[in-house]
Length: 322
Image (cartoon, rainbow, N blue to C red; front, top):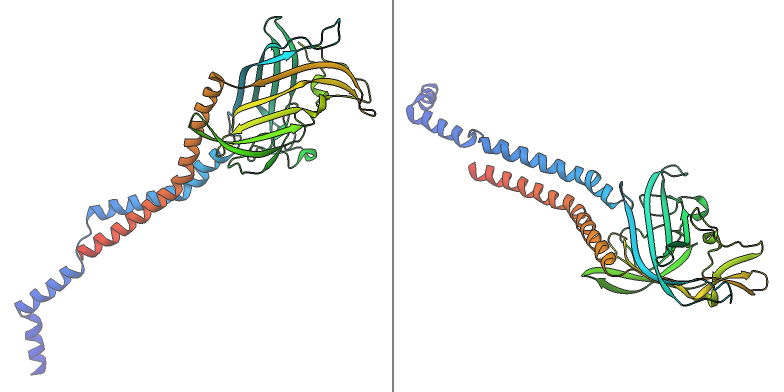
């Protein structure tokens, strides 16, 4: 009798309808939109994982492929009068500075930079000073790669801090650039670094193809008189790029006897500051680079948040459908 009752219960139309209703509640067909949402979730999640190494790393490298730096501005200079042996009146001079990548450096993993600096007399149409060096630089940090110069920077790094950086580039031989204040150039934030003191750069007066140079005997050096050499740099802190500079030795460079400190002969008075269109051009480039870095810094996090939002949306959608 019990078996008959169980058979009737399980085979009646009401029982079958109840079973079908329960099955439909627990196994609804999957919507095509579920697959679309799942694919989007996986794509965004993969993009969040890959965005760091593929996008952020190249941009955060201090000297990326194709990098260069140029400055062209008007300064002041004076050379010694051959008759009196003293400096004449300061006259306008054109100052041109360029740094470009020129293949691999001498140290594995480094790059070679052509760092060229020239001062010309536009009235006499001649070069009055020129110095070109070919340093090996770590492109990731902007530091000098040669073992003798470890810890010294060719250019300021990314994410500049309010501290002192030892700079070695062109005629600068390990100059400590100290942070002094914050500023802004055409709306672009800048950290100001400064050095005032001894400026010895004998090698920079060796001469070039278009400039005879200044002969120096053993035991002699060329430096700025009274240790009045100055260098002031405005550095955009995120990119590490210099947007403005002010440098010079207005007390004059002289040949000195190293042992006695005696001043022997005048060489050059010089001073220059980037301004006008040169600064505006550099500010425009730095502003673009700054934007790219900001996007690269925040893109992985943004994609991760989007992936999480998609995942939560999928779960909520399936729960409501159930």
